[in-house]
Image (cartoon, rainbow, N blue to C red; front, side):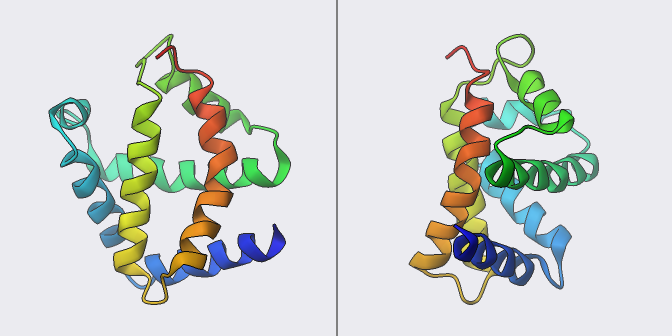
Length: 136
């Protein structure tokens, strides 16, 4: 797992440097283009603020894979997106990850199957934790 975590970290750095905002902007373009239901979720969103929140979310999701203990922030995010607030379908997390990996594949010049596996492995526990708050 340590090797995959390191591969993830190095890939993430390659993907966001030198244009971290461009990385997240491309991600949101991909996510919003996935369909009108997802697009509507961001209709009145301050995207600058959203990008900052996503950067923090990735940190908390990846930290969870190392400890299997949610940070207060991950717990808050999970509840916000869960059945008691936004009530997002759990399938949206799979779409989210697919869009994230599509973005990584375009921004990380060394992206390959190993990098893809590292991202999926590191992100999976946190995403599953967030899905556990979904009702559908």
